[in-house]
Image 1 (cartoon, protein in one colour):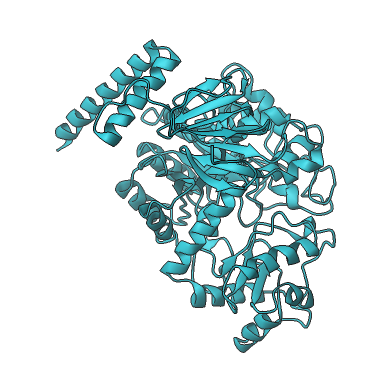
Image 2 (cartoon, protein in one colour):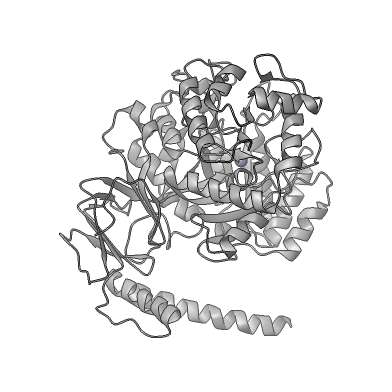
Length: 586
Ligand SMILES: [Zn+2]
């Protein structure tokens, strides 16, 4: 059995090496032609004629390819779901069936890749979950809710479960019962901040919750454990296979409006199905089913990479051991595939648990992705968690049998608001990498735990470190959809200004440029997925994911970065969102 497997692996690997060598030997145009032919053969059972016209040509744009030289072009063609000619064609080579889209000067970027979020949780929300991350006032909330109510059945629940904060609203408070009644009088509503509230509801919601013994104040506000009890009730009464599939489609439909075409999901806290659960809890063993069903029906419109979160408390990590025995990393297709163990591999302290788990992950040749929220010498209980993690990774690297796995599989520590240069250098030395998350953006007035050096991450320090020879790899993430927004343009605002949702500069001297943060969100994140030859830039032969923007990202004032949206999102050559601005009849 073992030798048979070995032979098969050797065969496919030799084929792969031959293919790679042939591609390397040819120019980029030849490479893309070869790839199209191979793809065409698979699809049509015949070789495509060499002069076959592209499916789509986009012209007259400001197309930021995010390639090695940050090349900007005006046209790009798409054939069989991949970019073909990238350049400056006035009309582009095309045939009778080619769709020509005139961008009329609009800015185009590669499809945004979010290398750490929780879209699987968002796709399992009870009720008609309605993102509020782009609301800046109670009036905005009312308009968003009124529009949602108009598109769903009377009496259906409208919910917003995490992903925003009232710090984003001019009024710096949640809407009241009366304000929600004015927006959605015929639908019960439930709006919750973060993992466990506070929350608010309207009159219809209040009467239903009170019938369940859940306490709601006269003005609709819900505090203590009442939000979690309400969420448990909504889960138990509203979630079923069909409603979950609908929520998956809703989550994907939202993602493409803000241009996020690829999501690396980082799992959930394992649900207990009691009121101890919050918005970040789900069943880690069943929550992917509705996503896989949607992909199975060919209705998946964004790319999903699935990490498996493990929080064993026992030193022998029994669940992690079973996962490593019975699952495979990086297995699937271009639309949906497995990823790593993360964003937890085990609970700690004791650190010995974490070291043991890291060694098991390495021994199975998986990637580990973990997170850090702490810094040294703070009252936070998780202070200096990155030190514990990097020390454990160093122990993995020091084991002769495991040496090199971290670099080869591209292990990651995410968030890192408090990491220091010393520890960046130590992680770089063993081949580890950093995912940067501006989750402190939604924090309110500065407190000891939300200003520099804790506000972080130290974007400038890390990006500078990444530009050194053999520098550390860094990518960008949202950590949406509970404590932070998915909307990448909000995170780009924070990374480039250091200013939080209340307008307070909390991360001074760590700002990076718009080019740098867009690179982290596209090109660099392609590397983090281990798919840098497929995703992250607009280059011939890569998967055709792009976003046409409503304004020029590189030219708008800082505050307007938050208002950037897609007017056209393309995934694999297919239009998955059309904002109605461009003429697509061409
Ligand atoms: Zn996370």
